[in-house]
Length: 20
Image (cartoon, rainbow, N blue to C red; front, side, top):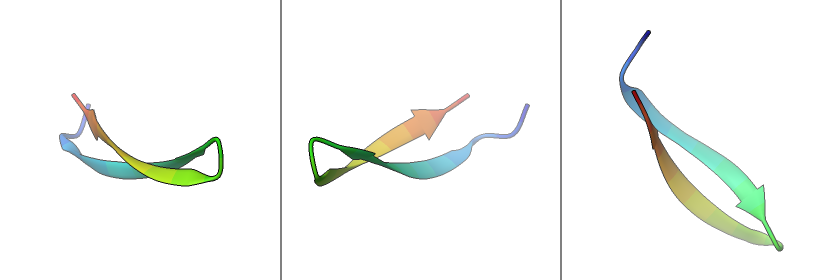
């Protein structure tokens, strides 16, 4: 798995999700 930063749309807002 790669460690990076992904952006997902939640309730119309952009939230930053750290993936491990």
